[in-house]
Length: 299
Length: 263
Image (cartoon, rainbow over all chains, first blue to last red; front, side):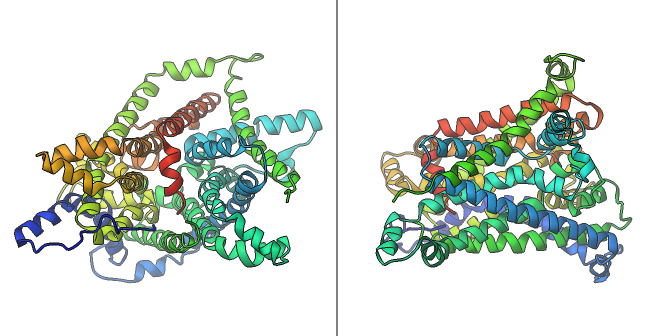
């Protein structure tokens, strides 16, 4: 986050007694204690468990066991669903945000879209899966209407809500709004002067986007896409309520492992969790870094 | 230069279609319980179910506890960081973003290992302690949003001057925090609070894996066993989420979050 701390920095901190300094640090102690006990500590224990065997000895065997076909395929399906929903969510979210911010539409469009996006980005999990089942399931409104009005059998085409594309389509319901929420302010940061200046210099619309707007926007777009990826990768409830255990994605496998040790190996479960942290950590870590970069132009 | 408006209109129309169809479909489905005519039977069945009432009450109570603990933890920390330890700000900010990196399912897995019945602090061994652990877990999940909302609120006021003015009038630390600072960042705190409420009321993984009767677990159970009630529940959940977001708007979300969400 961009911080302009000049007003709140002490001008010249007077030398304080060490007791007073300890008291200063005491002010943040509860927060750090909380973070240690309920965020860092438990996660760290999992990481250690991932490198231990059942007797608590150090081993790399759990990492090797992650290469079992069913685990690799679970990761792979998760990555595919997350990537598809992130890329499509970013593309459609960009389109919507662009239309509302720069599309020259009536004024009411933007606040309506932003409010709705705030709701929809939080409307995930169990109820979202119910909504899609009621709409595109075998007896859902759209399925039935297509059949009655056009004699078109959606499920005859090979479409199935409880599948890769069904899950992706459902995830988009919270992915697109999240993209809109983050990108709309970034599009606001594109100053009209830049566009005017480039058209005075003879640039076409395409050249303006290629050489001015896109270089300013790409960290926000790429960063948010990575955020969406991690967002989908860690999601459990939507997929669980939608597909039960019929789609073998990694969060559902981990859920089943925590519930009933389906892998018959506690430590392999920890390794599974470690793999998830690595993937979400890399993509969200990159998002956090890109976010700082995105703010450089968008003040 | 007049931009071409056909493209934007198409985008908005397609978006509206995609976002409204599932809501319409769900609503229509929820009315189909009585054969041959539309009725609100599914809603009556759901609302009259004692497990619905108790799970909603339980989740709402947890949400309120999460908000109170979250404010008590984050407001003093964010205030203290601004006032005395600005160089710690990046560290604290990073910690508050960690829940985005660690998926909730991994977090709760960690809890089950860290606080199991043979650990140094067997919080999962006792129902009340599990409730507390669940609440703390929710505080962790809300950290990114709550910290950001409060920190953005604090940035908009002059913390140092307010503190010095209050100190020179003899106010204690607690008085400064809760009677001077808090009222000044009230709308930021409230927007964080409503967002937290919306998150907690629909949260499934933590509650389900810690075996507590949260609302989302009830929804999952109904979804697995009933036909029309789930659609009614989805509509109810949507209305609740909408209510929380509406309240955020009312309490000046636009002012604070517009800046926060630039990131």
